[in-house]
Image 1: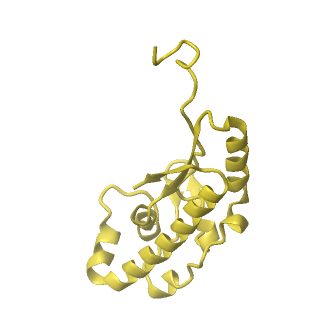
Image 2: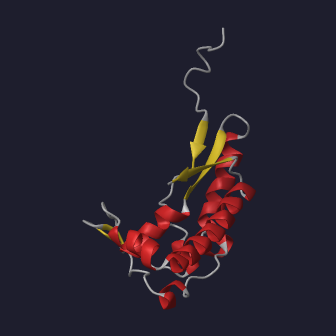
Image 3: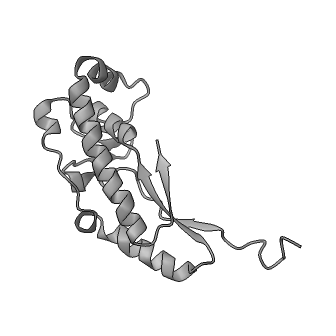
Length: 149
């Protein structure tokens, strides 16, 4: 009785899945996508470089995210949950410090040992911005935020 044939194939949730790096340009962090290497960032390993990171305005940096979430919420009504999506600070920091994907994460480990205050500053900036980005998604229709870490 719980599962009727009508309910059996309906969607429980819809997600706006985007790359975890999507909000970075809004923080003044530019990157390229290399066909073979994936995301490539000029590494953030100095105080001067980390100081260039800025506070993000999600509406200005990623207006398409708000638009898509509003459209999804309107389309599914109360029939399905709308999920947003963010990458968490440490995962994002690994891209910034390593400069690309990594298996060993040597540079971020070195930074954590030799420059812990610098790494903490970067993580705090990322955390503040990702928090704003998650709130922006909720304000625009996301009912749940999926985090990638």
